[in-house]
Image (cartoon, rainbow, N blue to C red; front, side):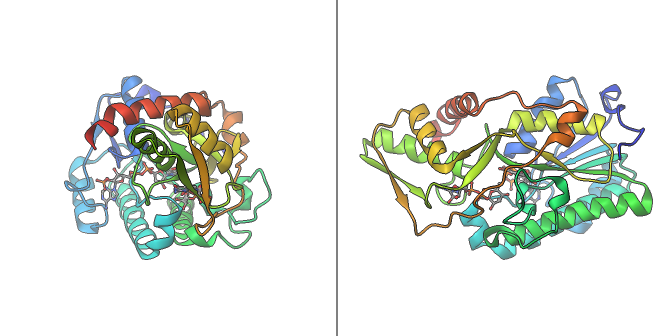
Length: 322
Ligand SMILES: NC(=O)C1=CN([C@@H]2O[C@H](COP(=O)(O)OP(=O)(O)OC[C@H]3O[C@@H](n4cnc5c(N)ncnc54)[C@H](OP(=O)(O)O)[C@@H]3O)[C@@H](O)[C@H]2O)C=CC1
Ligand SMILES: C[C@H]1O[C@H](OP(=O)(O)OP(=O)(O)OC[C@H]2O[C@@H](n3cnc4c(=O)[nH]c(N)nc43)[C@H](O)[C@@H]2O)[C@@H](O)[C@@H](O)C1=O
C-alpha cells in the first residue's frame, strides 16, 4: 500500500525535523544527508539534554518544539556480545524510547514519523533472501531476541497508529550498518568496527596474530550508513504504507571474508585466530530489499570502498584520540 501523501517531503525544506539520536552512526549520517539536500530546520537534542526514556520530558519537548517530521534513530544499540550480555537494557530502553517518541509525536501533531528497526526482527532460520512477510513466522536468534522483540513492537506500534488514527508512521529495517561515527568499543561494538580497531591496534603494536570471534562461517549483509541515510530520506519522501521496508545492499560476505578484507584495508600482515568460544549468532540474514528498490532507491557504496572510507575516518577521528 503506497499512500497519496508521499512525495511532499522535498518541498518542505524549512519544515522542522526532529532527528532523534543525531550523534550516533545512523543519526549523524541522516543529519549530513538532510543538510546536503538543503533541509535547514533540524531540531537536535543530545542524550543529556533530553533523555528519551523519560516520558514526561519527551512529551514536554514535543509540546514546545512541535516538529513536523520525526526520524527516530535513537536506541540502545550494540553487537552480538552487548545484546547477549545486557538483555534487560536492550528490551527496556528500546521499548521506552520508541514508545515515548512515537506516542508523543502522534499526540503533538507530527505529520510523519520514520522508525528504524533491524534485520534481527526476522526468524533465525527465515528463508533467504528474507522478505518483509517473514516477520513473526518463527523463533528469533537467541543472542538478540530482546532487542528484536522491542523492534517488532516498534513496527507494530507504527502500524497500529496508522490503522486506528490514519497517522503516517513508517518503518525501515536496515541490515548491518557501518561508517563514520560507528561504535569502536572492543567488546560491545558490531563486527566491522571491532575488526577495524583490532587489526589497526595489532598493526601498530607489531602483533603476529589477531583474534576474531566465532567460526567465521556466518554470512552478513553490510550497508554503508550513507546509503542508509539516503534510503531514510527517500522513504520520508516516497513511502507511506503499512508494511515495514527492508533496507539492504543485497550483497553478503562471510565473517571470514570480511576479516580478510579488513586485514587488507588496514594493512595488517599477521595471522587470523578464530575464538570458537564466542557465539556465531544467526547463520545468515540476507534481506530482500526489492520493495524499496522498486520504488527507486538503490545502494551506491561497495563494501571495499566503504571500508576504506571508514578506516580513514577511524584514523582521523578515533585512533588519534586514543
Ligand atoms: N548500527 C547498525 O548496524 C544498525 C542500526 N540499526 C538501527 O539504527 C538506529 C541507530 O543505530 P546506531 O546509529 O547504530 O546507534 P548509535 O549507538 O550509534 O546511536 C544511538 C543514538 O541514540 C542515542 N540515545 C540512546 N539512548 C538515548 C536516550 N535514552 N535518550 C536520548 N538519546 C539516546 C545515543 O546518544 P548517546 O550516544 O548520547 O547515548 C546515540 O546518539 C537504531 O534504531 C538501530 O536499531 C539497525 C540496523 C543495524
Ligand atoms: C545489526 C545486528 O547486530 C547484531 O547481530 P550480529 O549481526 O550477529 O552482529 P555483530 O556485528 O556483533 O556480529 C556479526 C558476526 O561477527 C562475528 N564477529 C567476529 N569477530 C567479532 C568481533 O570482534 N565483534 C563482534 N561484535 N562480532 C564479531 C560474530 O561472532 C558474529 O558471527 C545484533 O545483536 C543486533 O544488534 C543487530 O541487529
